[in-house]
Length: 273
Image 1 (spheres, rainbow, N blue to C red):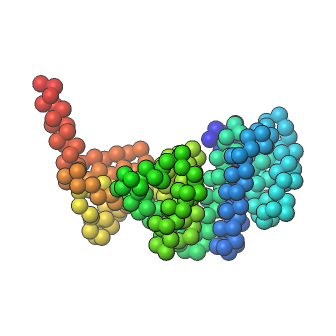
Image 2: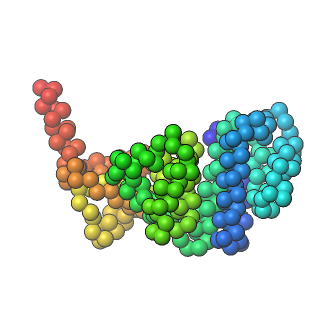
């Protein structure tokens, strides 16, 4: 997001956090679902999206427009959050859409937090991403943008129902639609990181040839937490092709100590002689 768009989103996000702190998990989840429905309307109606982000139109007018459209159709808090967004300043109409969708996802994560389920939701999203990534057939089916979203959502539901929390299922549905214009896998990754951020943590993606023991994972997490000055959540991916050692990705920082990397470096050095 551009600077003015970030400020507008921050105002709405602060209002959401204030509301979520005193509301029930179920109420916050309802608000999240309604915000995602508003985002769907904005996605389908570009003319409305442009009208609500028009910098030449007073914020009060834009807020009143969305209020007139949503009154009686969504809850009071959803209405206030939507009018807060519409009354803000946006660098582009697409950024208003992205902000509305992101606020809906943040509300679902806040709901999981209120229910003390956020760590589990984060882990379920990550593990589902691993399952999909390990199966080219499943990955192709869920990432096929030509297939109707409802059809892909039914497939995901069949795989997850009874194995994941309802909030996780709803977030996967959003990811299937390309959260913020991302790929399906990119959407899941971003949601995992948003979950960690809400818990004031950073994510370390660790790739190893064989699973780390609980003690090894805990010690690695402690070392990374000391290095980055905040709690770090370790997410393991097992890939026998790395042969040994490990690679660790934290944000844009990559520490690659795998045997495969060392072999590739050796081959490259030999080929240059």
